[in-house]
Image: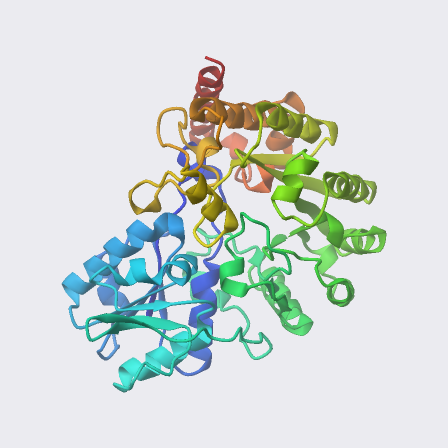
Amino acid sequence: MILINPKSTRFGIFERYVPLSVPIGVGCLAGYLLQHGRKAEIIDEHIEPLSKELLDKALEGVSPPYIFGISTLTACAQRSYSISREIKNRYPDSKVVLGGIHPTVLPDEVLGVDTVDFAVRGEAEKILLELYDAIKNNKDYSKIKGLSYKNGGKLAHNPPAELPALDDFPPFPYHLFKNDRGKYNFGFIASSRGCPYDCIFCSQRVISGQKFRYVPEEMVIGEIDELINKHGQTHINFVDDNFTANKQRIFRLCELMIKNGFHEKATFDCQTRADAVNDEILALLKKAGFRVINYGLETASERLMVMLNKKETVADNIAAVKLAKKHGLRVSGTFIFGLPTETKEERRQAYELAKKLDLDYVRFNNATPYPGTRLYEMAKEEGRLFVDDGWANLNACASLVQDSITESRLPYVPKGCDEKELKKDIIRANLLFSLRPKRVLRLLTKRIGPAGWFYLPPRWYLSSEEWRCLIKLGCNLFKSLVKAYS
């Protein structure tokens, strides 16, 4: 099976400085297929655009029927569809499978594309293995849970698949990406799946529900060991949705990290919730080498926190930020602007809260109603859902990375709010917070920018090309700020 990761999110003028992680989704799928003795190759469009040469090379030694699996986020749905057409034009007898959040939520739309044969709903490892064998052996698809497909001119949707336990999954196959190690940042690891909460803006729950599962600690330790001692990583970011949801698990994991001396060789970041930390947990994270903790702060309005169904309060967030700083951890926070019923004053309060808490990294995102979320349904009910062709404008960072005053409309603007004004508020908040002298100095010395996702390369100051690019970036940011005040 050829697994394809389409290029989706575009970071505009920031593209050069956003670290490219290995594609964890297709990597897990490839590892699972390989563990069970099936052939799997990965094509990542973030490394090289899809081409006939790439496809032919990936298919060397593969017997037909060829199977292509395309990972499909909502923002890259249009690209996934165009890839399916390219494939069918070249290999008309092949089978094309789309999986991920978008096919899970909208399988009818996906299968409405004439060059797509199957949509996988939910976590795909076991479903793909069964589908692989059914295609190769010309067997019936009707018993494969979690699969949608075309059957005699009609669409068939098999019952949902159960969420698999992670105990028997293989370690992440970092070796599949070793040839592009200079292009990837290997320092990303997923040690759990899911989150027990159901915030109105989170589309991940479509895949994993509210069930929280985690990779066995021994396997996580093995992956950290490989990243540090084989791939030379000195910083690793845990990409779990809610890293500290299970406190006993974190105690065991951190103790093993310390026992193995990882805290002396690398630093770590994680994302969690304010109500999932306490003095003991934060002290242990610091001891185990954690550097930054990221909270989804969302808003400074208690009223909006209730509407978001966060099940925590602004007061909880403030206490958690102060507690993390007390233990010497830097704090990254994300806020959402443009929420239903939100006022301009509430956006101002969010910005002031970020300054008051003296957060180290901040990103102010635009509210994005992804299919499968309650926010999506609210936007539809209000008649305020604005979707470009192929869902291309569903990008939570769009206002930051594009010339968003004029370039692309926001997918959602709450009632009583002017879109241009909202875009300006988002741009002003991001730039005014991140371009303060203290933050610029940290960027130049620590090489880490807004929300910890902007990185300058080592010894950047010795490169005339980097100076040229940074000056151009600075000019563009200044122009954006001027537009935001015009």
